[in-house]
Length: 184
Image 1 (cartoon, rainbow, N blue to C red):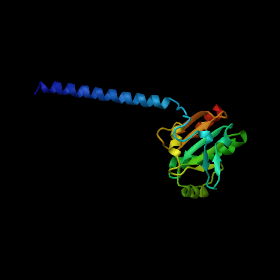
Image 2 (image 1 turned 60 degrees about the vertical axis):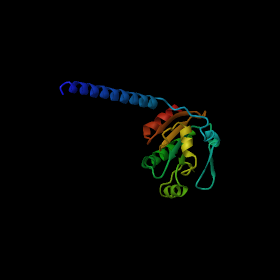
Image 3 (image 1 turned 180 degrees about the horizontal axis):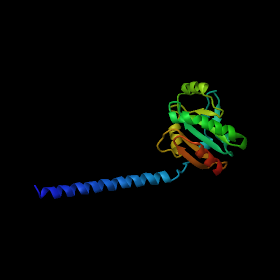
Image 4 (image 1 turned 90 degrees about the vertical axis):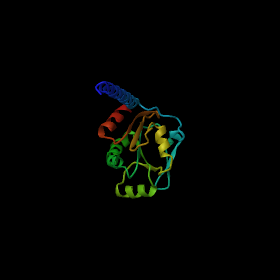
């Protein structure tokens, strides 16, 4: 038995070292992924972003081509998403303060149109909202804009030249908006 203990101890140590090495590799890969800014793909099954139009609750259409040439913030959200709902007043304030300077802001709801209508009746916003619905291609569109995890809220900012200057998966704060305003 005394001879078995050192062999068992060595096996445990080798196993622990292997697990530690795998954990380090996984962490390094995640850190590398988080440092890289995503590249916007021209087409990932959703068509070119600037050629897209989205239905509005009023029955009209929200054309992205009409907003090209101006700084544009696009926010993907849903009524069931607490961080999405919490950031809407911040976005509304940003739009009110910056629209005179040419900024445009579009909310794209990945939700049932009836739920979006009820929500906006209680908590209106001053920026235009397109409704992609639950199956309206919003997930593919977000993926084509750099959101590989497909979570919401997701925000992308475009400069007047139509190129992305930044994006964020997760709830925005005032510093995010200030940084993007400076970058454009």
